[in-house]
Amino acid sequence: MTVPGLRSRLPVHAPLALVFTVVAVGMVRVLTQHWREGAALLGGALLLAALLRIVLPTDRVGLLAIRSRPVDVLVYSAFGGAMLVLALTIVRASSDLTY
Image (cartoon, rainbow, N blue to C red; front, side, top):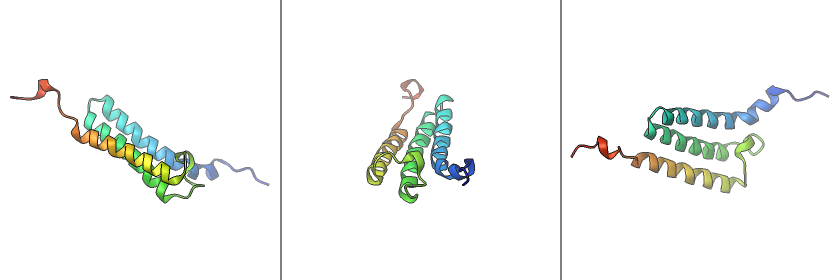
């Protein structure tokens, strides 16, 4: 009998690692004063989580599976869409506008 190693567990954690990578890039963009791009990346990360939850089987989705598949997809999509709408509607500060 063999003990499953890191190689057998890695595919289960890969979807979450991919989503966290996009989140990390988005947070770097936000922290470097690129609010719109960062917010769009955060929304994109949630939509990526929804897509992965739809496509991957339950035994391969790892920690992206919180509730049932329809609930997860609905929540990830709703929050991701809301983040993208916010990213598209962020305007410059009033001091940057010319009248």
